[in-house]
Image 1 (cartoon, rainbow, N blue to C red):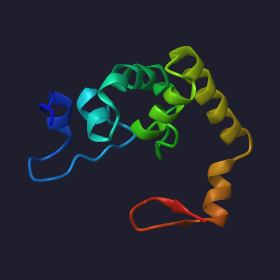
Image 2 (image 1 turned 60 degrees about the vertical axis):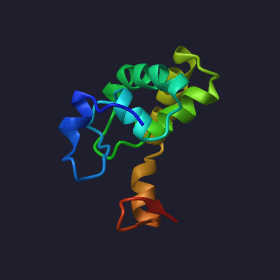
Image 3 (image 1 turned 180 degrees about the vertical axis):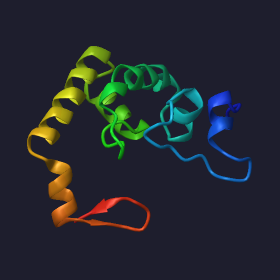
Image 4 (image 1 turned 180 degrees about the horizontal axis):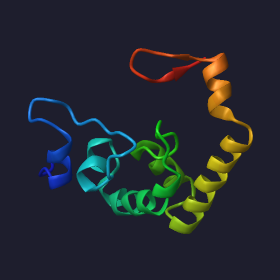
Length: 115
């Protein structure tokens, strides 16, 4: 496994699972916990720092798994991944996607959204 970092220790009690929230700093421990491959951790952590200004209360688009998908989609180019993520975020705001999801979808007990 991996050694706990200070950020991870601050996030959890020893007996509780690590839980990411939009206010959680994504560091190496958090990225690894959420399945980011070791060779992509640095890129995902850097991408999270670059886009922290668009992190909202629900964390849409800025959780470790989503950041990895954007990073992979642009073949590891941080500039291209950041642009793609910012464009996606702007599109979601322009078309009020969160409101549409709230209106036509169902939020399950675990907080995930479903049609």
